[in-house]
Length: 121
Length: 121
DNA sequence: TCCCTTGCTACGATTATCGTAGCACGACGC
DNA sequence: GCGTCGTGCTACGATAATCGTAGCAAGGGA
Image 1: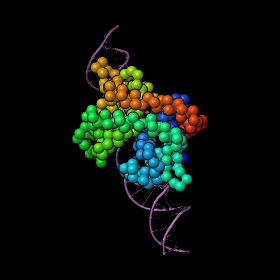
Image 2: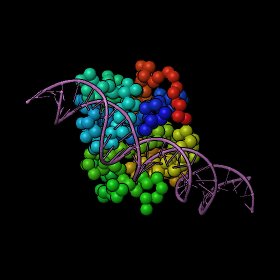
Image 3: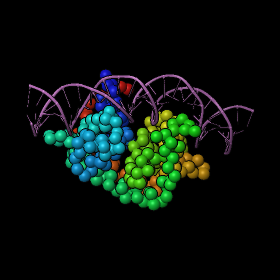
């Protein structure tokens, strides 16, 4: 068991605390989860175009996150293929929309350092 | 350089895309980041009580995330000790507050499976 | 001095994520 | 039938992030 990425069969960390906010924060705190939801905000995407949209994520994690999000009921796989948000997932995305405005304001406060120091890539 | 956790000196992934929302989604997508912000939402906490509040995170990651959040301008270390939100960080937390309501509704939709399948822990 | 708490770090072990390649299936044209 | 394309999805070795335990230096009382 615990196949490769191991997130599919693990459930949502913190779900036993009885506080759904913790389970939600944990789910959204996994890498690429927020990004995937963000990229699906407008229209459904196929797994491959979603991968392209997410800066060529490795398909391993992409599938793991899609499984997580499907299990959570935020994302579904359409009949003709392509991943899209469920009504619930759309609600969640609406909740995140103010983040866009905030991000712009954040940049405006010159907190994002100008110099690019991405030496590890 | 690139000390241990390596996130302090890495900058925010996606910052070179010019889209601050990407940098923000990446920062918030790191483990424990959302949780830390959530735990600081009311009052400042010392590093140790913050660690307790976050279900005993390992101090390595806690310090790394605190460095990230301080660098981003969301969190600051008070003079008498204890970490608290900056005005900007408080704004970000306000943006996240609707998430609490959503999480309750999410639980209500019986999406969080009743059975606890935490077999890997 | 002793004790306690603060923020913070070292370092080996474990886990998640990455990157490349590839599978099975179905729809198309020929 | 046959080849070619796209779909969702997986294997697996390599790399990076996270964990867990222990510990440091500095400061504040008693």
